Length: 123
Image 1 (cartoon, rainbow, N blue to C red):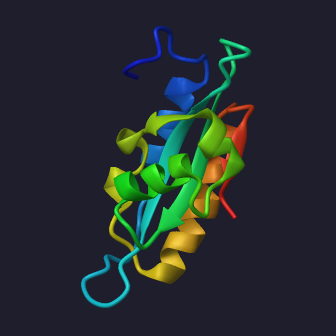
Image 2: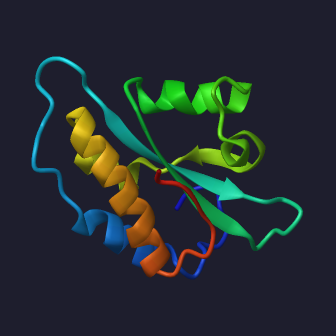
């Protein structure tokens, strides 16, 4: 899992849940969307980790930087966002806009069912 010394207990279930989802469309022309997942970490409570799920027409790296800079930011990502977790979303992108919205919600729900206690986004 990278910079987190010990993976949260839900990590393997969340990874399995994300990889169980697939996209039915691939955006080839027009509006291309991406879903992305951010690792959240509340440093006031070192054991508290969570996930933020979003979708964007931008590159996910750029969108993460926008969150951190406060531009159209999720408060959770701005304050607690550690890094993107491409291993949880790369297999889904690029998407048509309608499917990005569906996959965003499905990912958030899958993470909740996988035991991730702190899930943000997924509108």
